[in-house]
Amino acid sequence: MESARAQMKFLRKREKRSTKSLAERLGVFRKKVQRYLSGASTKPNKRLREALVMDTESAWQPQVRRRAAGARDSASDPG
Image (cartoon, rainbow, N blue to C red):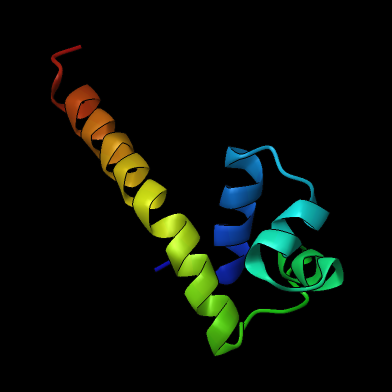
């Protein structure tokens, strides 16, 4: 799984959320979300890690697989 920073950036971008609404959804303070997004914090506690996994798990992998398939297809096309 990706870093907490990458997961938070993904959630914020995907749902066009503010740091405040993302913090509310994850059950943490806004300042904590800002610290992870800036890279100041890197290791989430167990509760935050579980919340990130629950929120990103369903949407994260399909996008990664789709990107990988697109890269494979473009590499195999005789240009």
